[in-house]
Structure formats: C-alpha cells, structure tokens
Image (cartoon, rainbow, N blue to C red):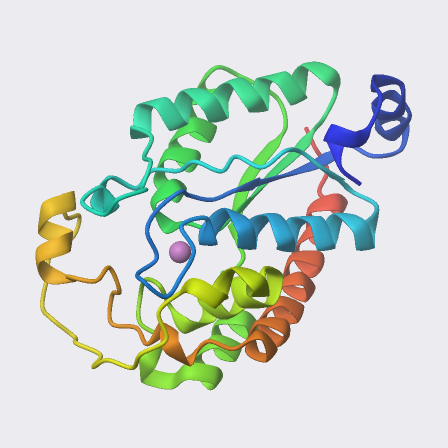
Length: 245
Ligand code: NI
C-alpha cells in the first residue's frame, strides 16, 4: 500500500481505520566494488513494502539519502549533514502528524541515520508534538542477526556485508552482472570511530569493512529478507497495540 499511488481521498479512508505509516530510509553510499550504492535504501524499501503489503499498512516514499560523510572519499556517495537530516525528518513527521497519523515508523537501512533520527524525535517531543515516532533497522532483531551470522560467520563484517549484498542480489539480481566477484582477504584493522572520508579510505581501501561481500547469494538474501519481514511484522503488531497519549 504505497502512499505515492493513492489519492488523498484514499488517505482519508485509511485514516478512518489506521494511524500508522512506514517510511523507508537508507543511504546513497559506496558498498565496495561488490555492492550497489543504493544498498541501504533498496533493502529498507523492500522490507517496508513487503510488510506494508502483508499488513495493509501505508508505506511513504523512501528517503534514499542518509548521513554518510565517512564514505565521501568514494565516488558516488551523497551525504546529508546530520542537521539537514534532522530538519528533513522533523518536517516529514510533522506533515504526517498534521494529517492525523499517530504512529510514524522509519524503517532504516543505515547505521549513520540512527542518531540524527532519534535526536529529531527528541526535539519534536520537546516541542510537544503528539504521537509515537521510532526507527527500526531491518537488522535490529536477534533472529535477523542470527540469520546473517549463521550465513557468513566471521566474514559478515561491518560494511558492504555479504548479508546486505545478498539482500540486494535477491532484490535486483540483474545489477550484479557488472560487479566485482574476485575473492580477497578479510582484514580486521584497529581503528577509531567516527572517521572522515579520507581516514575511512586509508583504513578500508576498497570500501569493505571486515567483510566478504563476494560470498553473497540471492538465496541467502531471500532467507534473510524473510526473517527481516517477519521481525518487522512482529514489532509493528506491538506498536499498533500501544495507547497513544
Ligand atoms: Ni549498507
């Protein structure tokens, strides 16, 4: 159930029955020579849309761009300043609140977005904006983490992971015809965080962080996607039961 395909009259009808909206959010950032620049938003969008369809819940257009300054030394990355992100989130939440939505859930695919999202929610609450505002990342549940760990063990790593690459392989298989496939070593360097773009590239020269994205397969993507959808559905069932003050 996609907001972009509805007429406003259909949104009026939806609001007579439900007050929840899902907003996928990700990043536009390099995911090594093995993965897609859109990885994070492609995954959050696919998970949110699958859940929206299964539960007849409205899914808003995806916020593709995220906070990714540490990837800026790699071509194609586009990053929002955290303050810009907070402004965008605040405006989007307030738009939905103005129409009567009470449960606004961001379905996230990128770790760097979490602090700006949560800070924006705190600011909205400081301004007494009513409603439930939250962010859930597709990988947040124990079952999803276990599925990723079981699939790739110590080769999962932290960025351009075989799990996220598998999810995009499952979602957009044709795009992998031109991506790297060669196997390299998995380095585990010591580093501090956060890193600037140049610092990041000096520690992780090909953009992977402790991962083996060449292990990604469509089949593993299908399995992890099923777990992620199941975990989000479970969480949403709890959110729907919450009494909004
Ligand atoms: Ni990612």
